[in-house]
Length: 147
Ligand SMILES: [Zn+2]
Image (cartoon, rainbow, N blue to C red):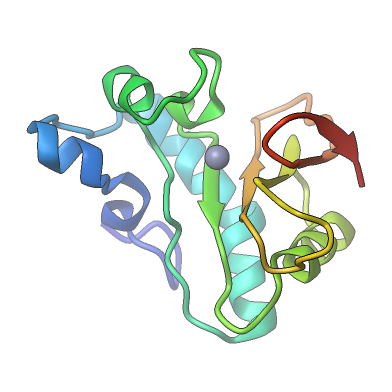
């Protein structure tokens, strides 16, 4: 199933953990709508702006997959509201700055990011149906700070 011009449902649901553990990581209708929103608001605009193909490393994670990934029980990935990605040849800091300036989002997090290494970590972004906070954070593996 295609979620947008450049992104498919299988890209937003595939998980090596789910595969390895034989877990069905298919989202329900509500999670599917949420995935479409994060694709439409962030992933597709980033894809069109840079013109570089990329595939998110993580999108929807059902509670079992999310737990195996070591993620928190409040993770927006479980609702299909979040995606993790990197754009080849573009630093994660630059991508995050572009998203901050051009997209609607709830949280934008440079995860496991060392500010001295612009391409370190990855970009996590979430979008909700309403009440988006527009929060921009850097997580260096220990603590969060604004950017
Ligand atoms: Zn994430």
